[in-house]
Image 1 (cartoon, rainbow, N blue to C red):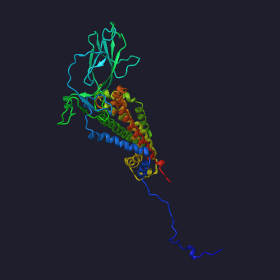
Image 2 (image 1 turned 60 degrees about the horizontal axis):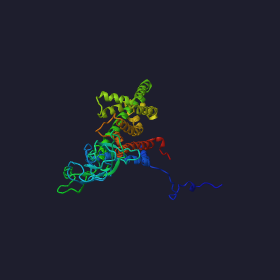
Image 3 (image 1 turned 45 degrees about the horizontal axis):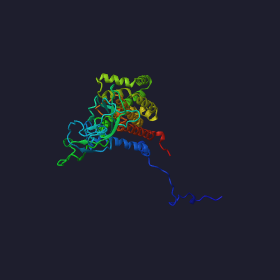
Image 4 (image 1 turned 180 degrees about the horizontal axis):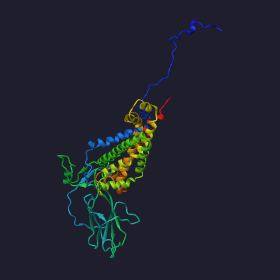
Length: 453
């Protein structure tokens, strides 16, 4: 067995290095931000929400169109429609055909100014009835809307000037028997109606640049509507922007108020404990049991909101009064858990007051939970506003909101689906974005999911 020498106790030389594994120390919020950025769905939802806010706040500056202004030449126009309009002469009354007619035919061009039809007397006819339809007439003989009736065989012409829009129409002329019932098969003609305007109308609407000369037979472009128009000729893009301000105001302001109320109420209940806590939470249970829609109606009556008037303020009051208990319960549970922690007991021993304990230790540690709750309550409030406006209890026309616009669009969804699709799509995208962001924040702020490796 060899003996130990002084060399055996000599320090290691610099040639030998000890490698240690270390990582920079991260705060709670730094770690949460890193984990949130790694959640692609939540990050994309955050960018989408920022885009919606830009669309709401800066959009009217880029598209300064009055959302209430009507373009009567473009009613229910879908996006991407042709904008050209044919310049035609001023309207002159029509006294009937001047040439021999052999069948149902057009007399001149079919424009949005007028459609003129002429025909010969049909067999077994004691009169004629004229119909107009947007769809081809099939075996079911659905001729469409009756436009005129003539109970003699001398009137064999008809001029249609009723609410004509560019597109395809199907006109049918039916022979009437003496009992005024159809006698024979109808004669049907397809008519392509062209958009038209007169020289004076084009100048008055600003469709002609200053110094430009136009004449009959020329074409001009009518006003641009990127997302089309509604049934009253109002620009859909401008109304969606204004409706976003109403929907997002209610969807963000109302949750902020009742979540704040729930935080204060739940903090007091959780910190006080005992009988005070029991009494306060039984009151919260009572509020949960109150029917929201019934109180919404009562608030509208109390504030003197009549039929057809917007109930934005009663809606806000109903949300703040009735929707805070869920947040209060959540915060109460967090406070009751935190008040048993060692650092809270140490603060008490050092003489900290109750207000200091709540504001310095308890509420900051519930901030993550409150933030997640707020992101989930915002889409709930947006959907509630949309639902109430859809059934006529919330925002009423002509004030636009996404819910009221959906209510208007569903009436014409078969013929002009864009009036329903755009507001409904924005509601769906906004609700989905806030829900995905809230889900990502919940994962990022949950301390139990932090990486401890």
